[in-house]
Image (tube, rainbow, N blue to C red; front, side, top):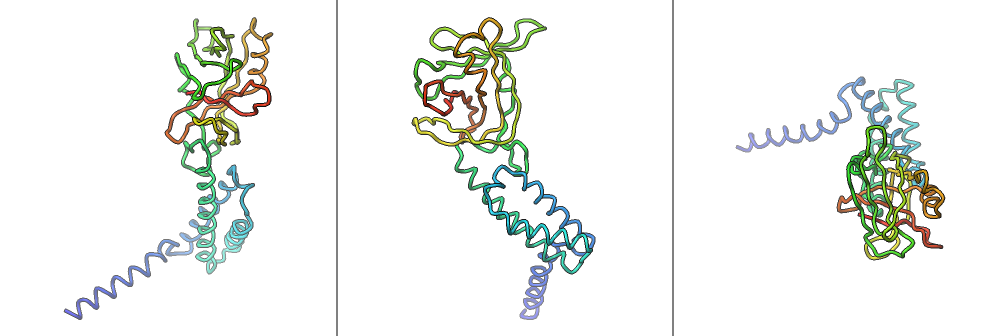
Length: 250
């Protein structure tokens, strides 16, 4: 019985030792591929919004060492450069995750190398839709945002921003842009930061473009994003003088 247990122990220990080695590649070609793949991941992460807010010194050094090993076909270095690069990538991703947690918005694309990690599906603004402010606002700001479908085959959907009982008509265009931080007012009236990608450009239709409000909204884009509960929110710039933040509608 003791002999059997000893054999089992030796097998388990052998597997425990071999598995980590196998994860780094069992031959030079596989190791080369793993290093190249991890290096590609690093390069994509470099484009993340938080790259300029993170000390990239150690990650850059790991990338340079990995590239040098590949360029020189330094088979002996593959394992060590791979482990270091994985370590640095993981550290940077942890930093990104912590910064995202601080945001009022959530990351909708779970890939930290994505160009638009906070994008919103534009289909949320199809057909008829209506959004109302999550916090009561002054009379200078809309009491509701209403989207209306196209009325004919040769026209586009449009939206109305009701200030009181009246509203001008606006065309709107939705596109994703580089991640940016905006200041928004949350449910408690507190000012917090939100990370966004999906921009809504609002343009007053002919006949309404002379109004002060339409000129303001035509000059200041709005944004769409999801909050921690997964609810899509419409962020509209505040028209109150001295209030440099976005009002949230849902």
